[in-house]
Image 1 (cartoon, helix red, strand yellow):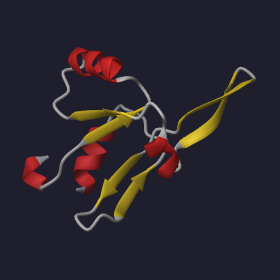
Image 2: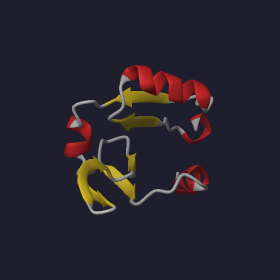
Image 3: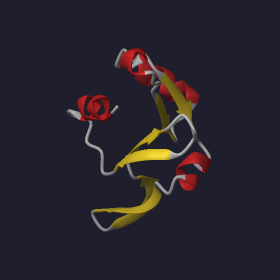
Image 4: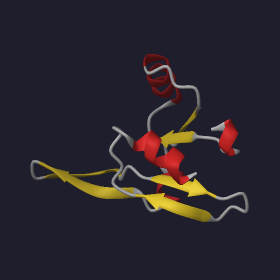
Length: 93
């Protein structure tokens, strides 16, 4: 990421403690932020109503945003699937 003059930040509604466990388990080398009140998720429009087996609930629509140096959103990756996504983002950078 440094070679592309970029940083990665992950945000989820999980607690800081849960984030720390997840980061350690998966040996991640980037910052994870806890959005327990989903303020960031709501601001970016990714806190949505979901449905599973007929049960409706609120949750994250997994999305990646590339934010330019001037603060504008340069690209949006919607409906993200983890497998292969890092390579897709690096290619976009």
